[in-house]
Image 1 (cartoon, rainbow, N blue to C red):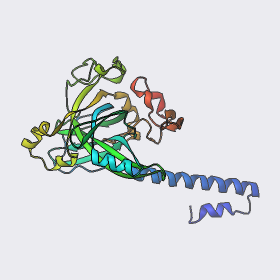
Image 2 (cartoon, helix red, strand yellow; image 1 turned 180 degrees about the horizontal axis):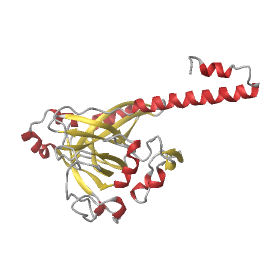
Image 3 (cartoon, rainbow, N blue to C red; image 1 turned 45 degrees about the vertical axis):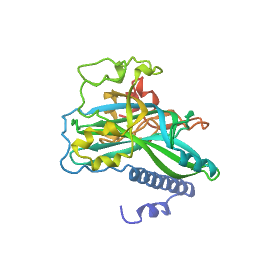
Image 4 (tube, rainbow, N blue to C red; image 1 turned 135 degrees about the horizontal axis):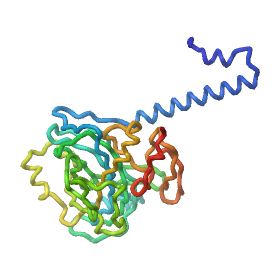
Length: 316
């Protein structure tokens, strides 16, 4: 095509006014789609891993579905809580997930943040700390070629201050963190899941009662932020338990999700994707929106992936 060819086509005198109008509409539509795709792709930032790189596995890669259910005794500084309430603002709570490779002391892949929720109840706590009970019910997926036990899935607890009158997010505050080891970890099964060939049970074979606490594992929450991982020696890393909050724990489940590999041409390796995140190329599915907003039909993995075969959602 010559420069300005599309415009020239629209101005072609051989076209009727109706044909010109239709062609112009189609051109504008394609330009709008390109603009939207460019904006979407620019948000999917991948962080490179410095040397030494994690040990890789062969094809096929491993795929996972991780549920973050609930945090008991979520710690909040009393001074922060009092100041937020005095300003007429509110706090909401969410979890962020990222990946960290210990030998290279670097984060990599993508960082994913779950939905913001309100605390259910408040405990008096001791000294300057107030304890909250927070139900997250987050679900996140990823696939990876990494088969290295020195690679961590890092979970950070975040409190977000909102100005309800202006409907804006004012600030975020770190409330603690923890890590899991799904990369190269064999035989670590969550809750009532049954072991299958020494690996995490696959979602297709999962028969656990998702409403029962016994179906979930739990781990403690460390003080400070996961940024300390970049500076910890091996000895300090081994003593992280000494920095944990005394009674704060997060409930979680990690399952294999090999069906996700049917969509790996639509998702980056080590990219964390939630059930309501837009995935270009997926068939639209119905997902619940924020509380009070109803459902949305979007190109996403959806919530039912934890219990139902979703292969039909992927375009051929």
